[in-house]
Length: 513
Image (cartoon, rainbow, N blue to C red; front, top):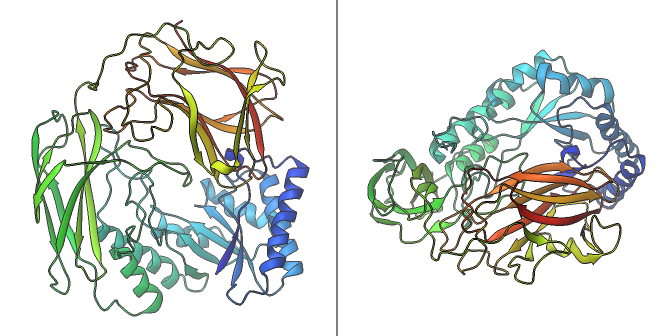
C-alpha cells in the first residue's frame, strides 16, 4: 500500500505560518511512520493529498519537504510521494515541487478531465521526478456540461469505463519511462454530486464496468464475465414537468456474454451540488413509488415537490456485474406544504439571550464525527451581547463535524411537522469569532431540500468562512427565497484543520431590514 499522511488544508483552516501547528503536525505524522515503517505491505509514503491549494505558498511546500526529509532519514527503505490536484496554471505546482521539495521522491497526480494530456504536460514541465496517477476517473461534475437548471450531466457507467482505460493507457503505457503506475477513484461507492458519479462498485459490492476496465489494465487479464452495458437512457420530457404528471422513459442495454439482465429503476432528489475537494455530502433521498416499470421501459410519476431530480436505471447480470445511468429532470411550480403556519414575528432569534420561549429550533442534529463535537450554550467567555454566548468545539484535527438546529429535534428526513414561517425576513444574521482567529467554518440553513413531506422551503449558506479573534457580523441574504417553512434554522460544519477548533456564536436571528 501507499500509506497516506494527511496534512492540513488551508481552505479547512490549517495555518502554515503557525510554527507550533506545523511542528505538531510533523511529530504526529512521524510517530505514525515509526509505528508502521516495517509493515510488509508498505510500498511508499503519501506525504499530503492536495494540501497545496493553488500551489503558490512556499510555506506549504516547505512543510511537505520537511516531513519527506525526516521520513527519508528514519525510513530509507520506502520512497516519499506528495499528491497534487492537476499541475496548476503554467505547471506552477511542478515548478514549486522542484524548487522547494528536493526530498520528495515521486509526484502523485490527481486528474479527471485532463487525464489524457497530463502525462505530456508533466514531461513538458521538465520535472526531475517520476510520477504516479493517484486519482483518475470520469470527467468531474465541475468540468462537464450541465442542464439549464444547473445539474451536471453524468455519463453512464459504460462510458466512464472507457475513459478510465484511456487515462491509464495515456500515462502508464505511453509514458512508462516516468509514470510508475496508477490508482483510480473510487474502488467503492460515495455520494459526490450523485450516488454513482465516482463509485466503481455499488453499495452491495456489485462491480461496475470501471472496475473491470481497471482490473484488466492492471493485471492484463480481462474478467471472466463482464459487466452489462448501457447504450442509451432516455426520458420523454425533462424540464418544466408538472407535479403528478406521468412521463415515459426507456433504457437500451446489453450483456457481453448475453446473460439475461434485470433492470431496476428509481428516482432520487438532486440538489445539483458540485463539491469541493471531495468534501462530505449528505445522501440524496429516494422518492418512493415514483416509477412503475417492466424491464427496459418505465413510467415516472412526477414528484409533488418542485426542484431537481434524477431518474436512475440499474442493469444487473446477477453474476456480480451491473451498469447504471441517470438522467436529470426538473419539476416546476411552488413547494406545496402539508400545513400553513402563521408568519412568525421578526426578528426571530434562533439563539441568543433574547430568544423567546416559543423558539422552535433545537441544536440537536450532530453530524459527522459527532463524538468530537461539543457545544456549551451558556458560555460566559466574552459574549457579544448579554450574559452568555455559544461555545462550539471540534476536538479532532481530522474528518469533519457539525450541528444543525432542527425542528423538531432529530427530524433528519422531514417526516414530522415543525419549523417556522419566516416570510418577510431579508437576512439570516449571526455573530461569530474564533478562539484564536483563522478557524474555517461553514454556515447553513434549510438543509431538507428533497421531496420530504415536511421539508425546508429555502436554503442558504456561507462556505469556508475564516473567522477572526474579534466578533464579526455575518449575513445570509434571503431575497426572493420562499421562507414559508424553515425546518432547519441554522447549522455549522467544519473539516478537520490539523488541530482542535474552538469558536463562538451569538445572536443568531432572522431579521427584516
